[in-house]
Length: 166
Image 1 (cartoon, rainbow, N blue to C red):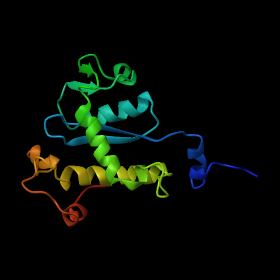
Image 2: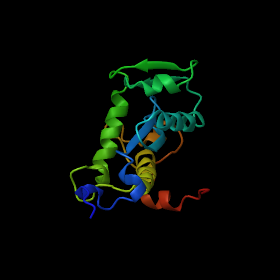
Image 3: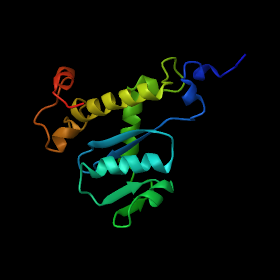
């Protein structure tokens, strides 16, 4: 007989020993646009995936991060790397907004996410919602409008029917 914690009851076997699932986000400081998001263990590999994905979308040579050592190990020397909570305030606020609007990332609820694949899909939906649909309460615009990528906020219909390559 195998006894497992209640929250682990629905996990896949390979995910039981995987540990906590982290969501890493890179943010454009000027517009608040989420450039990239990755799901995985809190390791250097997660930061590598995040930086590679971000580099494909911007020519920015400056990263602001907290004091976790993974960034210093992964970021190339030509990148200016600023460390400190004062530099990450906007990113932390974005994380808070995204977590607040996504029920499966609330640890103490019945709908808490247990499967990493579902978390990856939810992350893609949330990033799309945050960038294209959600309006900032002060600016009254979306992140893509502030980045000059759209002229109006999108609706769920626009997001669901936009032709993409899978």
